Amino acid sequence: MSEVTIRPPRSGEKAAAYSVYETGFPDFEMSFEGFSRSWDRCKISGDLEKLWKVAVVDDEIVGVAINLMLRSLGWGAIWELAVDPEMRNKGIGTQIVKESERTFLDLNPAITHFAIAPKTHRTKAISFVEGLGYGIQSLILQLEGPADTTAVEFDLEVGIARLEHIPLFIHLEPDTYWGYRNRKTWEYTIRGGRCYALTEPESNMVVGFMQLIPNQASNDTTTVSFSYKEGYGRDVIKSAMCEVQTDRVVFWIQDMHQEILDYLYAEGFARKDSEFLAKKRVMHDTG
Image (tube, rainbow, N blue to C red; front, side, top):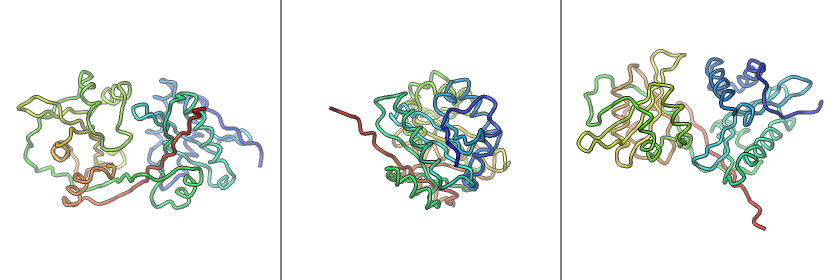
């Protein structure tokens, strides 16, 4: 095999990078439109050049990694990783991971962990990340079920999320680890629209956040991301069920939210997908 080069993607390589990304089927999750929006946003922010990686052999892209810094947690995360099926089992994925880890450390020498999330049914992917020193630490579940469009209004007031809410949102408990956002990420999320603040009427206290994202491939499904103040998790979920305009609703929820999971299963939700959170502690030289 010719030499493998790991580098940031170039401006004109969007389509080529996506053609490799989508070979992750059935596990790739973004349409080209979604991939393009993420690419363009990261190009503007500088993260495309700083964080994303492609593997190139003979001037052809054969691997791609979408990386991000979870600054609120002190982690560097390999968000998506795909290698062309004809080029697998040649060490390319390992090279991408190693180069991504070096980049994370260059950007933040004080980083505490690297993270990656293989699908639970992909035994080869799990063995791959474990072989690189990552250990599975938790489970993230994608649950889908019926939206309760006939429900009466619940106790929480729902209003448009505003930038001035960010200092309050930062302290809420998110649905998954990637819901831990810094101020910059919160600004981007809120400016994207479909974001709501949930307030307890008597105290006027913000106790929740939710973002409603209609599924472009299916007009009857809305994906909800949320954060909540301790003690208000189920109320936030119920409010979301009232607000969606589709027949079905999808939540991504980490396994630590046992009360919410128990409630959703009782309401007829079922697991549609799941992935492990695997982490590797960064061993800093203290000598």
